[in-house]
Image (cartoon, rainbow, N blue to C red; front, side):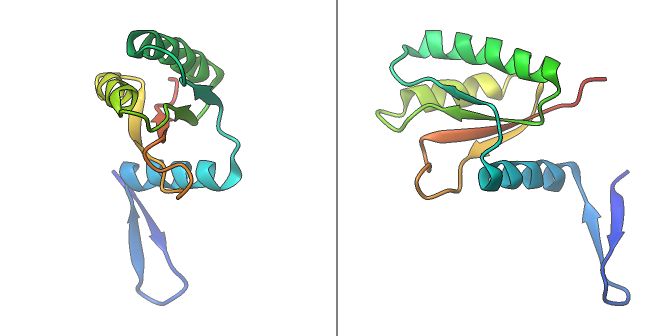
Length: 116
């Protein structure tokens, strides 16, 4: 069940959904620059996805909330491979391209599920 948060104005309520929590984590990582980073530049897509898999599992075991994946713009093949891989992973709560103008289409942020 989503948490309800009351705002300062009387009667104003927002719903705290899993998607909004994940988006907040990504936004915080974009602003702070503190997310663990993996750079896949120069790798073939298969090697890049393999390295991402190892990195993501390591970050999950450490308890990291968000990771930053630099795949570059180039032809877009690495980005496509990364997104296809992430969409199949049980450890991934959400992922999206960076909204930072210097990183658009070249960086993906990933929110990892919490260890139980």
